[in-house]
Each structure stands twice: as structure tokens, then as C-alpha cells.
Length: 194
Picture 1 (cartoon, rainbow, N blue to C red):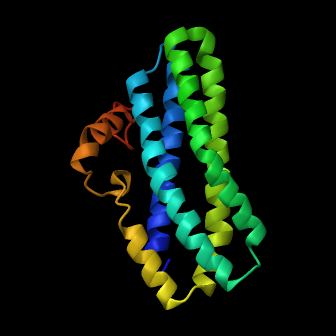
Picture 2: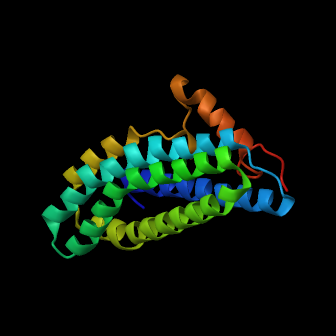
């Protein structure tokens, strides 16, 4: 990837994928052990997904990258329409998942399976979404966008600075990321490997 914006998008996709896989691994581990998960850590992980991918990453794709690509070609309009619709539904999807987690936390075992299924569906949805962006949209953008387009996109995406992509967290987010990293199983985080 020759453009900074594409590297940022790819790195943020990798961070989100790692977060989703970690949630699924933690849930699977606790199910096998017959224990309840660390609900505070799960809430922190879902909050991260809302704060960074939903509010920053997707917003810049839909408001900056996709319109520039639409100006250069109509070839991908159907895919861009789908991705924009998925971005628009993302905020609701994360709220639904947070609600399912709250149900599991408050109601216990009777709500475990519903949350696990919701988490798996959310993860599957986002793995497919990110794959579509990486395999179809990013190569098309690399081929068609101008140097001026890339200068604007590179500057905008460089401001994201997601701590899970290696950036130092802002003071406001330091405790959140500390909680997440300590909850993640090794080698992703500092938690004990199982």
C-alpha cells in the first residue's frame, strides 16, 4: 500500500479484527470453563469499537474516501452504497450488542447464548465488511484517485491515531486502553495465555 490513508485503514481493520477475535476467544474460554467473563473488560472493548471504528474510521470512509471514489468512477457505486448502508447501521448494531451484553451481565446464564450469538454475528458482519473494503474498494481507490485526493485522505486518516494501531492513547482514553490490553489474551494483550 503506497498511501498513508490505506495503511491507516488497513491497520485499523487489523485492530478491529483482533478485538473481535479476542472477544470471541474470551467468550469461548469462559464457556469452556463454566465461568462468567469479565463484563467490565467486555464493556470496554465494545466501547472502544463504538468510539474508534464506528465514530472515526467509518465516518472518514463514508464522508471522505467513498465520495472521492464516486467522483472518479461509477464502477463501484453498488458496493459503495452497500458499505455506506452498513456504516449507517453500525451505530445501531453496536448498541444492540451492548444491550445484549447488559442482558447477559444482569440476567446471567440464561442470556449467555444470546450474547455469544450476537457477538458472533457482529464479528462475522464486520469481517465480511472489512474484506469487501480491502479487496474491492482499496485497490480501486489506489488505481483511480489523484495525488490531491491522496494528500487530503492521508492527512485526514493520519489524525485517527487509534491506540490499538500503535499510537499513544490520549489522556482521556488511557485507562480504557489499559483495561482492554490487560484483558486481552497473550500475545494480543498482557492477559494470561490459556
